[in-house]
Image (cartoon, rainbow, N blue to C red; front, side):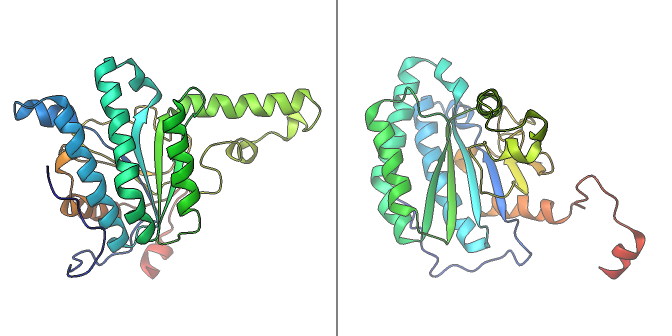
Length: 258
């Protein structure tokens, strides 16, 4: 077993000096390939992936990121072998039980994104506990996308609006992007500025598709268990080099002024 990574910041020197994005989404990909490349079982890749989550939370705090959303378990992941799913559920439970107190001590607010209906009672209770204990923390918000799929999230939001419209609570003509956004699981959070995907794959895989409309996408070749502060800073440097226009055009005067 590897030692648990301390989430504190003492004794570390920051090498990133730019303005950090406010909200970073991360698709944590490559656990299985990391393990296979070393002749290890997939379970070991997942376990080492949890250690990468700890490093990422620590780095985010140091780098000034306010919100990190991690794609921990998609609604499609239930199709994996039962033994692997059971192991992933066990990892989630151990992470919350072992790390929740430390996250709370370091000012991290935990927020869960995803469908909770049908979850086992012990998992559901742990998710409620994590959110309740850390609700008032403000140093970093860690959004854990668990049993989450963006298409399902959008469909559920549309369904709720349809039910309200059928009941006469809202005018169907008044339903717009703002109304739908208010029904999403991320309501109250700013859209992600940057989405990082590890392992070299270049797709969103049903992650924050509505919210990522104007996010910058950075795809890193590093496998998730090897993701560290240096990889995080590499993504931030690439983000800083982008010109964000949000569908508009930056005038020559604006470029000159900047």
